[in-house]
Length: 229
Image (cartoon, rainbow, N blue to C red):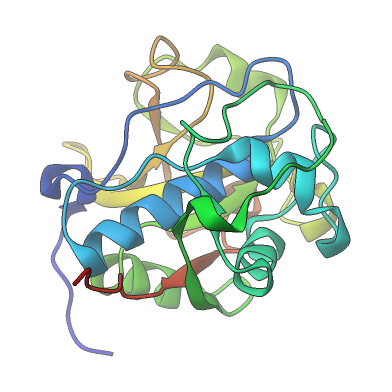
């Protein structure tokens, strides 16, 4: 692999949308998914990125082993978007924080996928390389009780498991860096609102598969927007 910058923050390129709030619905996977598609859409088609619908994923992606407000995985949500023919905007299919009947309207699609890329299991070298060269990446990891106390700094936990079966929260890696003390970290967008953490973001230790963050990482391959005549 070729060399990459020592630090990178995709927010500085204007391709990362605002932090959202999943509220009392276990839909983190849908926010990780839309965040990734929004950013990769902007990278391929130019700014500004579209604001896409989590609710469509919650309501409509069950056939791809996603369970609405009871959990899911971005990789499986990317599959749904690809085979379904696209994703509507948040404006057209607004968030309700509850699982409802699917009302997808193909005429209102705002983004389509050509496919997805799944990072090799627990390969943080590949994860870092793809994050630097391809854009933000959906990751999932294990949330422990100590994570709810996070306010700032680089998060690491001695009680974290690295077993894929223990992964329980999906988020979006949008960059990486090194702290003043030399600690490696990822910059991660959460879906608990902008008041949580560092304006809705957190830093997590890099290079140790902390809390299983490299167990099921993936990103979408977005379709080029068709030019209007």
